[in-house]
Every structure is written in structure tokens, then in C-alpha cells.
Length: 124
Image (cartoon, rainbow, N blue to C red; front, top):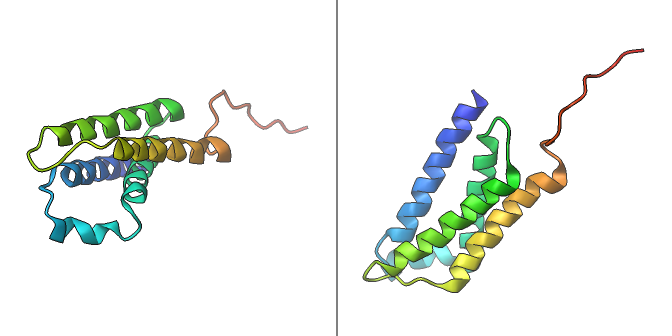
């Protein structure tokens, strides 16, 4: 059940990122979202995506997931270059990558998931 909820949440989060990245750049609508700055907004978006994608896996591959999230962020910046009123920005792609790496680091440094086989507890 946990994986199902995480997968639906990850799909919803990704949908929000795609819609936010491809929506027309109306300054009246977009400007209020920049309370904490554009870099932080992008980094938080891809941090959340990485965390949800890792949670949605039974056997998580943390760094592969981060690389996939980084590639999605770079691809979304590329898609923005194809829209008439948006532009691809290197700083946004960098923020997306930083968010994905920080999301992976969240699991890696905390040891939330073990990558090797777990030994059963032995009672003496």
C-alpha cells in the first residue's frame, strides 16, 4: 500500500512540475511563487520528486533515481526553450540537479535504506 501511495504522489508531483515548467510565463501568476527565490523553488521541486520516486521503489536505487530526476529537470528546461514565451536557463537546470542530489543525499546520509542483504537477528 505504501508503494502505491508513493507512486501516485510521485506522478502527481511530476505533473505539477511539468505544468509549472510549460505554463505560459504570465508575470502576474508566476511572480508570487518566487517568495524564496527561483533557485530554491526549482531545487525544492526536484528534491521532492527524488524523495517520492525513492519511496515508490521496493528496492530503491537512490543514485540512479537522482540521475533520472536530474535528467527530467534538464529535459524540462529543454522543453521550455521550445515554448514561445519561456527560455531555457542554465541556473534553473543546475537548481533542478542540486535538488535531485540533495534528495538522494537525504536517504544516503541517513541510511534510510540498506543496499546490501540484511542478516536476520540471531538469538543466543
